[in-house]
Image (cartoon, rainbow, N blue to C red; front, top):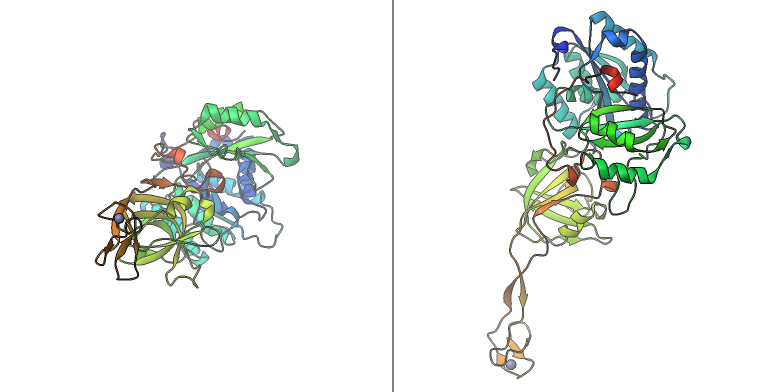
Length: 450
Ligand SMILES: [Zn+2]
């Protein structure tokens, strides 16, 4: 929240942006960075006050027509109405208006109070469901907002603004920039050292299996690195441990990354295409292992659905092969119109697998000989068994059921960090969940950017 009540007494500007550049979400974050830099250089910057960290919000990752990276941003600033108007003018003046093919930029501003319950509803809808631009435009109008640039990006812009009022888990990310990415060098040993000294309060710095450094995003210039963690101060500490050349500055963002917030519990009958959720059910058929190793299985909670657990998700794919009829599992992921030739139900594309309860597993084996204890063999279907060692025959003998130990355990199975979606919560974060509210950065703009 806003401890000094700054935003209570003064009007608040909510400025949301998305997809300002097709070359990657990095450019949208860089735009916000430049805007904050610009504000910090003017007297205006000291008259207005950030009532939240800049937000970086990931929305529904399964939407086919999403903007690149699906990360939208917003700023939340309190001040006199005239000053807020000036902030919007500066924001518009900074835009790169060259039109780029495929670019769907959105920039919105809302000045005034937004109802918290309504904001929550909007955020969860944009995070977990399908929404089109008409929906976003209608909501922005209802909130008394203005659409300054009206591409598909307004959907994300609205989602980011709504997240400001959401009370739930959050993480922070420090993004460092360089316009000349070729000149950036980050010393590998210093990343290992940073990870050792700051994790688990920072996470996904290094992929433990492959040793791959994960703080260098693949999105390219001008984002040179991103460190993720639980609070702003641990990120600054981590950044200072790194030995890096060629970085121009950084920005700290509050974000819904690594929270699993898109995995809301849903019934299987609620599994409409492109929705995300956590679906719980009993395994109704033994898994099918496809060529290449992907696993398909069916679960039911009254309604039935197929679950696809692809090889890329690692451990979860391995344990899925060992599931049997009667196991109770929950699958987090999104609903896709895939594999329609193989299955008559929609398919949940699994991002994670939770094994909740294991059924007893039996196998059927030939009986042992009652005379000598040797193994018996079938004399043909329905004709009984004969001992291989002593020749004893029993026309009424049949296979016996034997309980076998399960070689998988109850637990949560997730992909390795290198294959994780932005929203996926790494196992190392379990226990660090918190209820976040908007926090006014104590040092103002200068504590958010360098
Ligand atoms: Zn025998």
